[in-house]
Length: 179
Image (cartoon, rainbow, N blue to C red):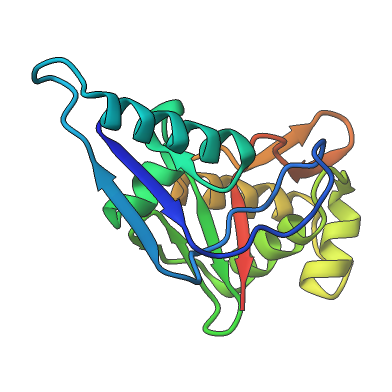
């Protein structure tokens, strides 16, 4: 309870029931450190803490001790990429998992990108052959082989088998597509 951070940027008006997307700070931040373990608080220090709490409750400031940081926020703060997140970089056609580049073949990359761009949709093997491979005269089990190899290269379960139908991106998959 010793650090209080207050951003000087204006908060955008919005609906209270809608979660806001975290954005990088665009303005300066004031950080105040208060030692609360020493002797009793003076009336002036007590009043300062009351005012800071009012700022935090109004949304103009944030008490760092009021909430725990999520795993993503801790990783971002420490400069470490989360190993559970798979990033598809479309410009250089690279896939990264955490800090590690995942070596994929052209078809594995295209298959992962195709499914990541269409979450929660199930595709048959023939649909995947047409959309990813560009033709349908190959054996449908070719898709199974590429899915198996893709799963082996990634440490997180990204692809779900829908028995009797085909494949889709897993609901719990943490995939981002970046230019």
